[in-house]
Amino acid sequence: MLSKTLTNMRRTPYQAAAAILVLTITFFVADVVGFASISFYQAFKYFETRPQVLIFFKTDAVEDQINAVQQQLKDDTRVSSVTYVPKEQALDIYKDLNKNDPVLLELVTADILPASLEISTFDLPSLKSVASEVQNSPGVDEVALRSDIVDVLNNWLTGIRLGGISFVGLLAATSILIVVIIVGMKISGKQYEIKILELIGASHWYIQGPFLLEGVLYGFFSALLAYIISVTLLLYSTPYIIQFAGEVPLLPTAPLSLILIFTVSVLLGVMIGFSASWIALKRFLKL
Amino acid sequence: MITFDSVSKIYAPNHIALDDLSFQVDPGEFVFVLGHSGAGKTTLLRLILREIRPTSGKIIVADHDLSLLPDKEIPHLRRQIGSAFQDFKLITDKTAFENIRLAIEILGKPKAEIDQITHSLLEQVGLKDKGSLFPSQLSGGEVQRVTIARALALDPVLLFADEPTGNLDQDTSLQIIKLLNDINENGTTVIMATHDQKLVNKFPHRQIHLEKGKLIKDTKPHHPSKPKDEPRSQEKD
Image (cartoon, rainbow over all chains, first blue to last red; front, side, top):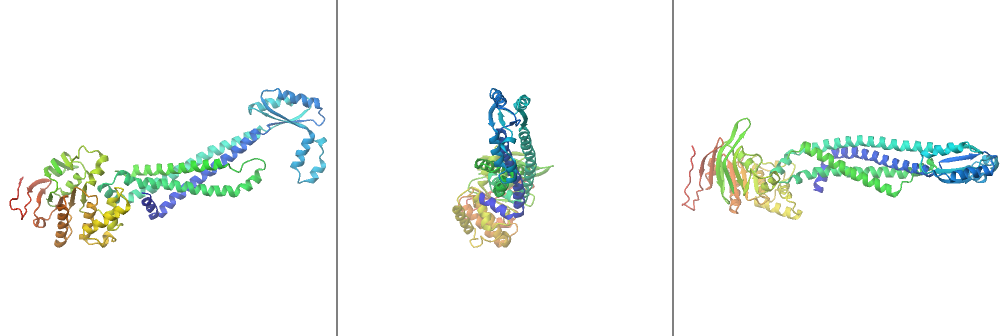
């Protein structure tokens, strides 16, 4: 049956190319959406696990004031971690960040940098209340919240997922229709042969099988081709994206995620191809 | 082998193709079904193949009561009936070999076995060297031989040939009937529908005469070598 199906595809190369092309576009977009979702999710998790509130002390704040705030936060059940960054360590961080700019390094000393506390809460809603409570503590100069970044990333992630799924859904529907039309045309073109097969005693499965397999092969080859293209592009662009994103781990994509996207994509391809052929058979073939 | 019991077939709106037809064909018989165009010969074949259902009456083919046969069993029935059609029903973009091969392929046999059976069938119908030709490259008689070879592909218990000599000259027609005769001598029941009374009179087989869907005469076989077989006439009109 496989060789018969492949022969059918070979004998109508333009129809086969059209089906594979439109399905490949669909799966390419689906793969890109999949990889983007995974990258943004990695970034989201990264920011979520970073210190989410930074409490900067005034440069003239005394050690007792800092210790009091630190103790208050350690006793707070909403807070998951508290890390003290003294002036000297702040200078080290500053130096590390600006190691390529000696002029900036010359101008800054530990005295003018503030000591700070980096804290994380168990959940995002507690961030704002904890921040407002320490805002007016003695010695505190400024409280910076990172929840904004997490919120923005979360919105991006939701947007990519919803927008991506909608767009891929639209493309998938278009692809199904095109495969239905192509397989339907083939069925119509073979009505005479199908009639003969029926009369000589061919089973329904023998007649329908090659058409179903044709749709499945369109889906399979398209999903495979789209995956190869998208992974090639991903691997090619990974160094540039890593450089652009800095410390945020957008890439590389984990091998498990690559396998997951491949599996889901191929399974979807087979399902879409099968469904489209099945619809065409129900619509165009009366046995 | 075949029993028609008061079978009628009326096509919409009220064209009577077969009218209260009753006859029986025993295993191993060779029967000519005679009648002019529109007598109901092709309808007979279509009913036997369960391509259509009778309006009334009962049909039994190879122990299958066709009115009770589930749709999923139809392919199994058709594999027991070899059919050579009036319009050949060959696939024009397949060679003679491929057309015959197709009928064996549906059983899912191994490729080597399919090829071996196909070659043997081509040889049986005298087209050993013409398997690679397309139907358009064959003569009328050769095309008919291909349809007969295809009909034999599944080793059927019954062969129904619908006007196999319709467009052939006298000599070729005789060759085709001789071929059907050989097939019958190997044990296959053969029914041949034709309008050519002169042609069938050259053979000693039973004749069923149809006219406007009615059975008007059913003659017994007359074997010259067996003088005791007197022609039986069942004049209905």
